[in-house]
Length: 227
Image: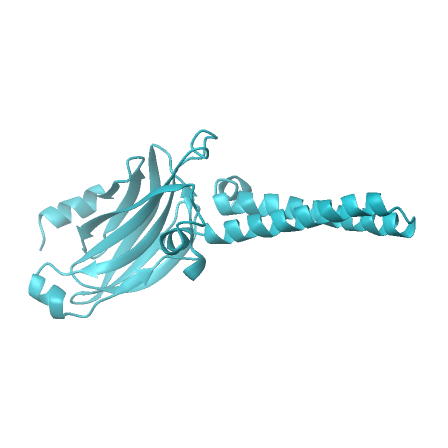
């Protein structure tokens, strides 16, 4: 992943700001030591307050960056995932997932189709007036059966895409809304397509929050005319 891609991730920007705040706190710590040695109590107090401010801000920004792990900025139509499928056995598949920045992951899935879901997060004022863009993250990938009876009784496979665990921003906003009053709305979207051996699929997210799944031309032909 290159720096241009990293800088489009909100967590990266927050960690950079956290590092700058902690660097400011370190400078204040050195200055505080000099003021104490010079026996200047008022100047020492001011430096101590600046130190605490920098330290608190740095920790706050670092925590916010951690809670936004996995989130990305949402444009008009944002490519979010590419999927390549290979059959292992009937209703058993190996999927290679590729993110826009080049990261890959291989998973196994049971079913006749794959389904991917995403979460979109929007902001209230004043964050909205400040230009804070909507954010999204992929939530999960799961297998789907064509037959509802198989869906109820067949093996279930779900791949969790959350990176921050219990400290994920959406999780925190739902459990403690009073902590994050700037979060306006969180809503989900999903899309699915049938699985074919050698299939290649692209998943995009619209600014409206709708997921769009598209097979390539060869995959679409085999979905329409299965053997």
